[in-house]
Length: 259
Length: 259
DNA sequence: ATGCCTTTGTGAACGCGTGCACAAAGATGG
DNA sequence: CCATCTTTGTGCACGCGTTCACAAAGGCAT
Image (cartoon, rainbow over all chains, first blue to last red; front, side):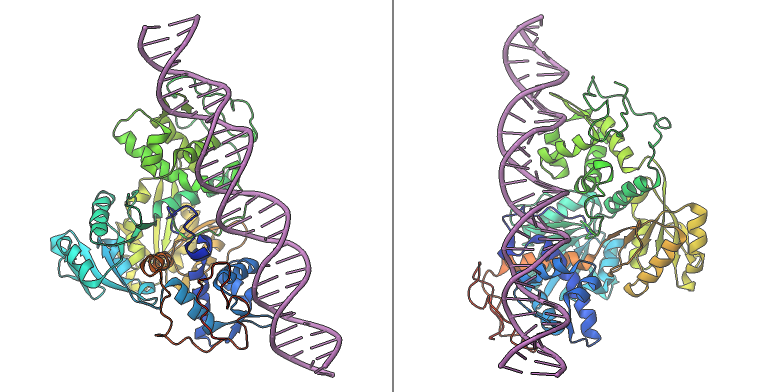
């Protein structure tokens, strides 16, 4: 998943639908859409859950937050559920999106089919490089950063995607916010600071890989990861290895520094 | 965050470090690396936390799982902490990675600098399209899918990245797993099924946007999202609107179906 | 040394999310 | 109309994650 989890803590459980449930609704929607295309009329929580990769109790509880849309003994009406979830997610309306930073990633995003298919429409592509201006990417001409405010305003864009290098991200973010955008999907490896009321989700490719590496390391060597090859850089300023030099609660954390 | 949250439930808190903490370590590492480059010797939990976009109590607790690496009254030694976190995440070793599916996204990933900088090395690029074979992307020649098993084996690859269309993802996944890969980063919008012991993380661009749209919709109209424009597709098979037609716990869920 | 000041490390409380397990609801067949 | 069988909807308990708040630890000045 995208690593973006900087969301309003808890109180903001918008209208009582838990954040965790909201995050799963698109998953259900995708599975339901597939069923719909195969003209399957109804589906049980068990079937749908396995298609979406969750367990059925969780799915039923999730749906219970939306209302009672199932029929006991039968299951859920596929078409009806597709409609309800789409509506809940706000996908029955049109969402113009602007993508800033048309490098490799920005171009990939512009070409990504999953956007258009769900009510998202790429309203504009923006890049700071003048030599890109006018060049068509995914059938849309790239516009210069100078046009940013105008583009957002003219198209009523409320969602912005940042695919710039890290260095430019905060600046772009500020301009997007100033132009009136209230939701940002950030692919740049930076922490963005935004005013209250602006939502930011982060997708960080390198972080995902690092998390995988962590688990991979654990799977590979259950032995101590061999401490002598790389010399630890200068010990911390003073004697800071307090307890835990002995075996703590789980006595296998290698006590690296010899105190 | 990438939406990939299909992780081993709870018991698998590898070696006692909570999953949530692991997911934040790369964040801390990035902030620390920046400090290191500016030759800042020490940093307090407060400063580092704000740089990483979390609160300081959380950061201290996270670090406490790794051991006692701070000095009271002073803070944390930047270099030392960089080393400890890197080691914990397994970034002191080399991780060869193979990317399958060299479309727009795959190419973007191959060019992504964040990989190489953290011990990840793109060992090979694989694509099913023969016309791509041999063509260099990011300085590496694309190889045909036929070579997949050989490439994985020869390079000792344990992490695979899937950037193919949804239709091909499961098949590619199966081959990767059969070839010996135990960690997969999946960009294709599909639920992958893998055997026990294989880790999958999912990054789904369209899901992130849908979550943003949900919150955006809530921010925009706190009024009922106007029910008459789109006719709901045929009511569920039978009388299924049970309770909740009246005002439930939070009496503002629009009772869509008139029973 | 001694006392003050800063900052860590963590015990404890709380809240969200998950999963179990079952009663209620409805379909279906006789 | 009644009995049976399937599947939903949810009450409940449990565990992880977050946050508060404070005691302990160490630096530093005097």
